[in-house]
Structures are given as C-alpha cells and as structure tokens.
Length: 330
Image (cartoon, rainbow, N blue to C red; front, top):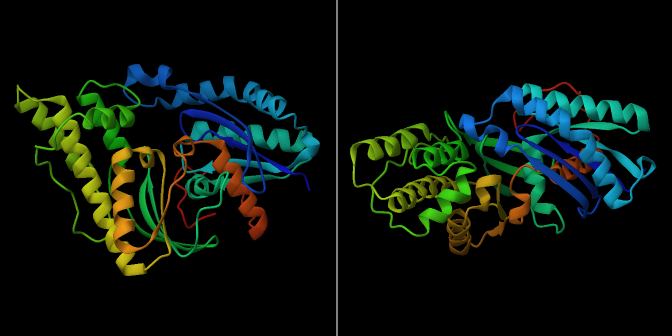
C-alpha cells in the first residue's frame, strides 16, 4: 500500500485537492474558491458551481501531485466526497476520482463529508479522544452528535431549517457585507455591543436547532429602525447564535459526559464561538478539540483523513452521489 491518500472535495463551491499521509500530515493542498463567481447571486448557483469544478479539478490535482513530488504509484487510494452536497458538484469529484482510480489502478473511497469535518481535528496533530460530543456548524450543516468511537455516531439533533452558517451569510447580505458572510460579521461584531434582544430559537427545545426565525428578526429590525447600527446588529446577532449553540452543547455534555468536545465546520473559525466553547470546557472539565482555522472550512485534507479511517475500519461505500447523506451513513 502506498503512503499517501489523495483527497478530493467538491461538495459545494470549493474545489479542494490534498495529499495526506496516514498520520495526518498534509503534504500538499490547494483549494480554489468560487466566491467571485457566486457573489452577484447572493448564494451558490449550482450549475455554475459544477462548471467551475470541471474547469479547475484536473489542473489542481496535477499541481498538488507535483508540489508534493508524489506519483500515482505512491498512493494508497483516493478519498472523494460522495455527500452530502450539491448533486452536480459531487458528480464532478466522483467521476474524476473514478477515472483516475481506473487509470492509476488505485482504490477509490466515497467519503461522508460530515465525517470528514470530524476528522479535521486530527489533521497534523491527533486531538480527538472518545467519547466525544461533536458540534458541526457550517454553511450547509448544523448538528450535534455523540461519538463513542470512529465507528459509532449518534445524531442528537440537527437544524429544522437554515444552518447557522447559512444564517450568518443571509444576515451578512442584509447588512451589506457580501460573501463570505461569517468572517465579515465576526469582525463587525467585535466592534459593537449586543444591545438588541434578538430571539434565541429553540434554545430550550432539546437538541434540535432553528435559525430561520433569527434571520428574519434581524431583517425586520433593519427594516423598521432607521437609526440601526451595523456593528451592534452584528454583535447582537452573533451573541444570539452563540447562546443557542452553547446551551445545546452544555446540555449535551451534562447528559453524555464526554471526554472531549469537538467543534468543527466553517463557523468553528469564529472567535466568538471558540471563546464561548472554551469557557464551557473550562467549566465542565472537558477537553476542547478545535481544528486549526485553516482546516475549519471545507477542504480535501479532511476527506483524505477520513478515507484513511475507512481503510482502517474496512468500510466500503458505493461511489454514487448522495446529496442528503446523513452522519450515521458512511
């Protein structure tokens, strides 16, 4: 078996390719963003996303292989996202991986994008210890899970409507901040005061989430208050989001008594989220596991890392795209 896993991530609007060894060392990675393509639409336009993936994917693979000076003979396999995600975007990655697998005579592993995010905490340095509570917060997903081993995932709750990252992006557009919305809102929030009492949807309703009402509340405030201050709106919005997330996490910790708390996904890069989660872990004695910020957003390194786990566990998946793949499905 070769020493490297080639990771391919095309679930949404980033084309990402990486080479990762079994210990989680990232030998090379390149990620091409499509923000410039989609910004005028206020969100990801699926047809344009898949077309951009088609144009970018092979040149990036060639570049990553050349940078790492790795040949196909040194590959243990190819790990590629099979879901969840946009159908067209997933198809580009999967078809490319299968073609290269046949040409290079290496196995191809269809990887669950959600499990990839969990594996992001172990890139470069192993951090995660079981049992763990996992909070996955991104532009496409918001979920809370109890993970007792690499093989056992219990989904405790997910969002009933918008993900928290999607809510960040929509509020950013309301405030005229553009894309990507999350970092812009966090920066603006740091300069404001959380004076506005926005709702905390479902904060006392088990482990389910809902963010569409919060998004609408921010829009109504901006529409009905001529003297609204963008920094105060941002600070109040972020505090509402973090209050909801932290309440669910704290309840899950008391309920499941884990060793570690892993916070993953693009919103895990938020300084406000990180600070609040660290406070919860200091209070409960649980170890906080955070991926470095560069591994929080979608990237092929986490997909390659998850593919190594699939090999270790003997997991064999089909290579059909699964846009609605769940966490408990490999």
